[in-house]
Image (cartoon, rainbow, N blue to C red):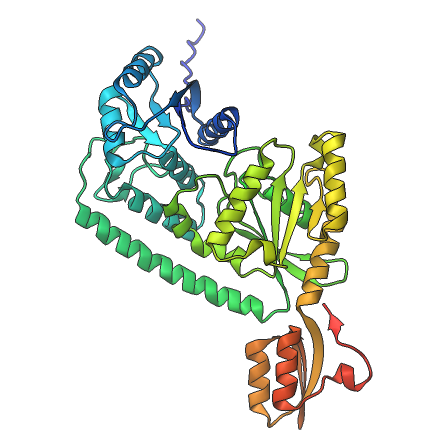
Length: 448
């Protein structure tokens, strides 16, 4: 008698079904409706949602209570009955009242664009700081909204938790508890930031300039990072594939070592709460010696994406058009036609802050590294000073205003090899009356 086989059950997670609503509000925009729909679908796929339908329509006027008029609400309600989505994504920012009223009208979970991005960030965050930042942004966003996934403010599931979970029956939450949790998160974040600041100061004592990758999400930053470093960090054709910053050391053609950092991608209409929460992470770019703005030129709306990134960088205090640290990396040139490529080649020929490349194929890597080396060489000079051992003030000044590469105590004298910007070099020599050993021997300082 043959043994009966035990039944097998699939453990594969079934994707949640979502219906996307895209209202075309009557205001000027740099993107087409199709491009906006493509992006919101990409955001939904980034968190493994199954997009069953996208409904797009013109909207002349936004209703205060429901955002949409009754006719549009009824039509979408009937659509939701037929399609039975697990969640309805509204590709626009909703007020708490509008979100609640639409959920009641459609008898379905509704999240807006901000909620979806927070959900993705919640699923992507890996480091302690990343998780804290997402939690803080989520709580700030949810403070006046219906909250589903917080039971006594404890995490019930992955993501930012706006899509449901074990805690979804708890609709009302005590605002005082939320405020206390926000205060606690801010305190924890401050501790993490202080630790990171100490780490950055330690790195600054090593003669490694920092090169930060910034750009629109999915522009190819992580692929470029892998190409330049030989690493294999997660790089996928997916919006917000990378969230937490990654740092690696690479060598430039002139022998100078630099630290390359990959940062979170930007997106149009990036929620204000997220910009505020991730400001500390974005300081990686603000304080960098070189800023590589990676631009996906294979996209028809790459100029709009470029402008979105510029706007966020300027909000962070970077004077983009006048900042000599910025290098624009026009990526994915292998995926554009010859006419577009010719136009970009002409631009790069007359603009030394533009580099063309294909990160996936390694095209243009040498030119990019050379461009980085030129910027770092202009910023700092490596020189050696022979200081009197008793001159503690001069030595202290160098430690504070320059990167001390090496120090050789020789009894009455100290040979101090430093990496310093030209302005500080002139200040030091004028204040302490020291001349660099390179100059004394008839050599100019070595540009690093």
